[in-house]
Image 1: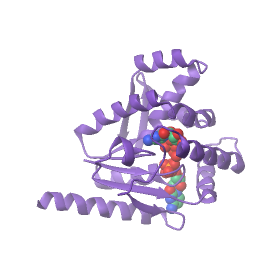
Image 2: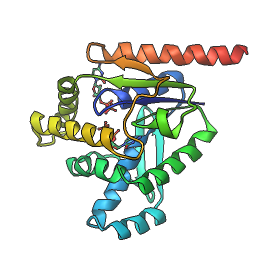
Image 3: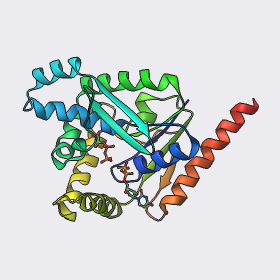
Image 4: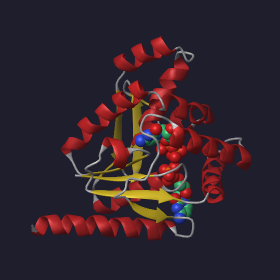
Length: 222
Ligand code: CDP
Ligand code: CDP
């Protein structure tokens, strides 16, 4: 069974999904992290596309969720911190707009989720990757709120960036992610809209957890 949360950067998808997964003892998949790992490879080969695709095919991208932490691995090496750099954030939407990259990451995700109950977050999970997901959410928040949230995170990590740079990065990614040809960021018709601008973190976790618990108990009774 898979539950998906899509939406723009900083709306709260990953941290909410992570907390819900820990609450309900289910698995968590951060699909954006996988695109970020692919971006590391792209930067490693100095953006040479043919070399990038060769390396992508030969590389192993994997992940592991434990104790509310999502770890991403590239050929067995933990790259969870590296994939959050501004350099990766600046190039990830360009890499993710490539249909061959998307096909590669989608195959990987579809294979992994066969084996357990998952909550996953991304941009196109409800529309393109898992159109038959058991539950779909589309999380949004206004741009200033999202920029402020992401800025607090990067500041806490000691990174030297301004609020304006963070805001421009997420506005630029929203634009690229929403307007690309292959599987753009879009609300699925059957997704539940969750606007977190005025919600507390705890409220959004409780809202989503409750909907999943209700679904699991209905399935058990049938
Ligand atoms: O956490 P944040 O919202 O900053 O981004 P992310 O979830 O780590 O995703 C990084 C980028 O990967 C997004 O801006 C998209 O360009 C791309 N992405 C995608 O195209 N499709 C997905 N299912 C997930 C992410
Ligand atoms: O995955 P996405 O890019 O949508 O967002 P995230 O990586 O979960 O980052 C959202 C940040 O805003 C996290 O630091 C959350 O703790 C914080 N936050 C939230 O998600 N919801 C609120 N109502 C308030 C804060």
